[in-house]
Image (tube, rainbow, N blue to C red; front, side):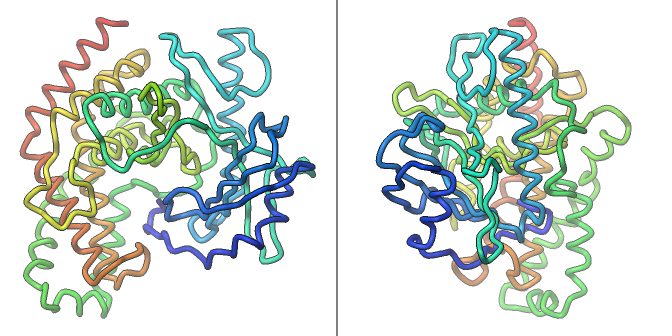
Length: 406
């Protein structure tokens, strides 16, 4: 998600107009079916089925996507980044196993299987296709026999989610972030979101929102934002002091981007790689825990049920820190709690800012939807803050456990 939260998409094309685009990536193989796929709200995604397996895919299926250039104005950089980190992972696998070339399936040190989606080039040898309307299309391989879930189902699922993010960070831990393009400048820089919020408060539509029937709720929410200002730059301050360093991160490691194998119930991949970029791993940690540890989800209308589940947090961090203990520093551990609280507050701030601005960016399904979303995140942030001591103790326990296992 970009800094302004924009997820508005252009009109979706009719499926029957996609055949020449899909055919370009299918090359000489016959396309049997094209159907909408997944529930993403940024790119338009389709599952393409061929009449027979294609050698360049080793499958009958692949994923076709129209990249939303309102969100990603330079979509070619997404593919450049993917080529960079996929090549890096392939080099690591070659060094460790002697296997050469493209690597879609990896065996982890513990014997687990891990899959990386691969870029599919078209018949002309390029990674993208630009149609007559100048829309930007790309194709990637489908990881079969696995799916994502909108919420954490149980403790085992929580552990797998932590493992998935930790393993991904470990794979990229020695990839210099300077080799990646920043496809979303300013993303997760909370002080920038606060500055945008302050600017919105001077807008006429924002003033009307403040004077609406919800005005008391709005005023209380504004007070909450003001109370959080004091610590809103905690991660950026740590970065500027050199306590934290930029690394290669996923950028959007929510629970519904973690693929779980249908048979083993183990995590086998983390998808939606458009946001891989330089950043703080704490952005990812905070977003993953924010997403996974609110059992009722961010779309609930029952504020009383919103809480941060510390037991899920414990299990997720166990899975995560077992994978990252080899490169995590003392400062990295020290700022885990801050990342959870901050990223939760940040998302709430983005929802609230969009509500005040007149719902310009986030898609809404009913009046005051963005206000309700903001209230959920702020309630979750308050729950996190109320359990600070417990969360810090969990991090310390997991730190000791992870280091003993190394």
